[in-house]
Picture (cartoon, rainbow, N blue to C red):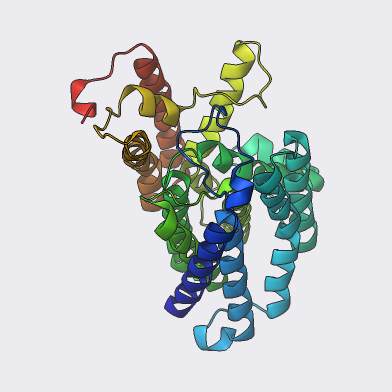
Length: 364
């Protein structure tokens, strides 16, 4: 598997370097008054294209030379995965280049890719941890596929929401990929482990240029690669292995998922459309109210320093869900309790920051 990590890393790092140097003209289309903008200058948003290339080449490499790696992943299966994911990722990349693809079209593309994946691969969520729901799903088989489509089509947008600062979403994706690959190897599923390990290597190749220099962003394309691949891997892991709790992926991904659900609730409570962009996400509040101003004569350097110092707070916060998910991946009750605890912690922390009651020890 180390060889596949190297392949995905090298291809991704080189592709991101090329896009970083050749795509600055498109970066000028990203308006300076966007609420999500916390950087100076024109930074390309095509890192996701490099991640997609790195992951795809490594998958095809594993399909062509799978026997030495004991992967058992046919080339046709790897190519099929890429073809199904491509519509959503390409739609995100077009948005990154033009800023003209409406949210509803991008949501339609991710749901379309999810539907293709579920239909062709036979994916479905047949276990939820609740006997009543599981009984209903058993009686209505298409309900399992519908839940899987919503999960696979929705997670890319959750990753897109937390992709606000250098290294934030990328490092969360790295942690999640390592967690999924660990559990997949625990149950002897090397194919699933390889699927996310290749994404892990490609993400490292992107992060080399993204953090801490912030020379390129993942954009919507990168978020869609992370979200779809990780969601598919989680659905397949639970579907294939009965000893893996269905709440393992829920706790593992609760940070981006709850950030999305809470944002929808917050906007609806304020009378706004859930698709409206704002600057009130959890990571943005940390940037504004916890991370102190870095002293520098150059405003761009000052903003970059604050940007980079924001992400570690969220890395530690995400680890609060990733670590117990890995430790208790087969214990549904503990995973449920940890999920509820994370949600309560998130809400308490959010209200604390909003009300300017942040403890001094959290301010470096």
